[in-house]
Image (cartoon, rainbow, N blue to C red; front, side):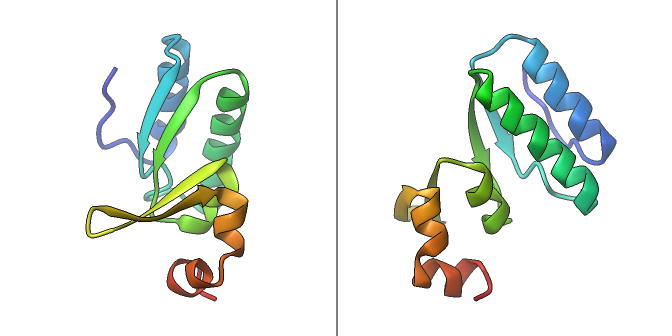
Length: 104
């Protein structure tokens, strides 16, 4: 199943359809884009439940803090190359990651 240009309330519906398809892998590109903060939280809560139910999720997300809080592992890309990788909690605590990507 391929999902394109989904935003707003359609994002929750698209995630639900993908989950109901019974797939074991879900690929998501910028699921937070264009969403109000409350809706974004709902989408990520649903994704967390889907992941805990056994579906692997590959997430591409510019909201680095949200992505690292959601994920177990992270990869930092610069110009298409992996420049840093590790456990999400380690990346969240890394001073260089904080300065460059987390606003602090």
